[in-house]
Image (cartoon, rainbow, N blue to C red; front, side, top):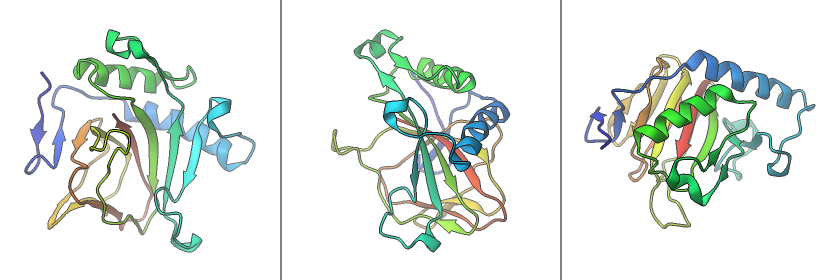
Length: 197
């Protein structure tokens, strides 16, 4: 049975017995991101590489306000996931493979159609007030955040409560079933690895 260390009313909870190598995870992502930004790196589900969604979730916002970028990792889900071997992450992301396997083992493989993404919040960026829903299941997913970079101006916000998640190798379970948002009022971008399911 998974256990959590709640920060406040189970809005955000740190998994006490898991830690990951944020430096290796960040290095893997930066190589892929540099290739994408040079436009020499093809993105898209059919190619088996990262799919970039600029200004994720807010396509109607003018370009100069676009502060959120998400890179989706192509993940093949087999029905055998419940048999502990059905999640396939590309071989060019070995540290991500290790990280996801740790989390799946900890959760006793209780994730439904996992989605993995790197989420970037640019400096002076913010997101809308929202609840994350899975339209296929008509319910919220389990969402796990692994901070890879942060600064003193990065906060998750719930009502009148704020949380700072440092990039110290921790994995956090985030309650996405209540209204929340996030901001980056600091001088550097914030990068989180998100695992949903």
